[in-house]
Length: 439
Length: 159
Image 1 (tube, each protein chain N blue to C red):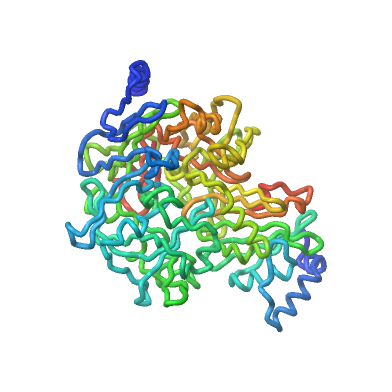
Image 2 (tube, rainbow over the protein chains, first blue to last red):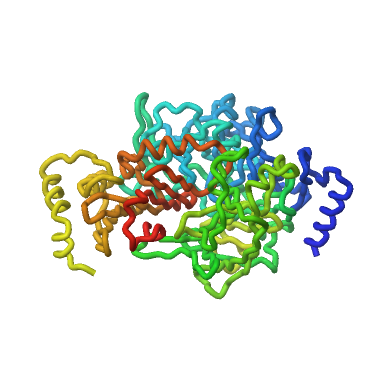
């Protein structure tokens, strides 16, 4: 019913050829319409999120960051309500953990350092699967998201300088994204399944030598170090005094594309009247923080052998900007040289193609949900006259290498309320212990 | 499955170089594209335990680092490493396992015309393919020399 109403609203928008937004503060540009959804209340636990193309989309020479949901948060010096900065365009990422913000956004706050266990200032290396990394010191801040506050939150302040980056961080990935133009955002808001970006492995008594995540530095070089879990870069949600057991990402359904989309990041699951687990939602507990997707007869799920996680796990990740899955049906890939850049990682079928996959709880194989999706020609969408200035695309797919799992990126979220319950927390209204996803 | 003895016989160069490395400091030789000695250099560098598996037309030397990341190096009968794969909660040192191919990889990454967005990596360069996926705390990837893949080994088998 909701879907039908939404389609009618969309049709109405198209017929009237006006920018429909219903609360969206972003202007609609290009041929697409704007869509809003999720909770419209101004409750303390509801943070507005927007898919608007990123911080430079509306600037001269700016580039659209497609299918990225952004949030705005207030970052203050610990204990201060005046020494603050409002930082917009933080990528909402259910695939990472902790707040990372560009140095340029918070430099004026002079945030205090957070120390490693050896007493020196801690530095963090965040690695991403796409060949990029973020490097910078851990600093303490009081961070407010809508009406929820995380006091003394260890965050990563991403350095603009490349000096002193240890080779075990930089050479892993080679692509420093310590700038707005490099990252396409002012930072990353990691609200995924885990409370910290490393956990016990990086704390004293953890792995030896320490994993390549935390370092302490002299004037000339940096070396691996341990950091207490409480001082590691932390998912801000777990430090809220309430509504701290997870998040709900709500984005409305869209047709193939939209200029902008607004939605909500709701804090807590089953803790307030506006964040109850819907009876229609299926809860998927995880193994190694992954679940199983069966696609085209191939089972893509996690397994454990010798205390070690082996793939191919599948996962839900708002920070991925497409639906990424291995090419089991010979879908044509897009060209590498296009007016929209190198699109060789995206699928370019001749026309809109419908698919269906089944998601499975790896610990309870009878818990399943059939999930339909569609993939269209990414080159046509990114360069088409009526869609090239749009920021949101529901049918963007791309290649995950052979043998790897299903990466359910942002297109999955349009029209879905995705519940993400954090490891170690309690959701009393659900029988399953986190970490889990539900939709 | 071959016996341990047969594996040693199949890899005399590995054995000899391993003996030499015990007595002398071994250079940190390239892994991908390098010879079997580079496997031992990598193992030592990563402080890893080694498991050897023989297959038709190649052998796999899997190293598990103390951090739980597994690096597997695929060795052709001639002793050359034609593929490496990794998976685990942390990334291995790319420079160490890509060896002389690291510069090509690094330059290839930076030469891509920028398209914003986080996604798996599929970098196809002349004589080198690097693929990676996953997310924070769960990474996987592979790098291989396409023209050296044995007929019986599919890309998804490099894991």
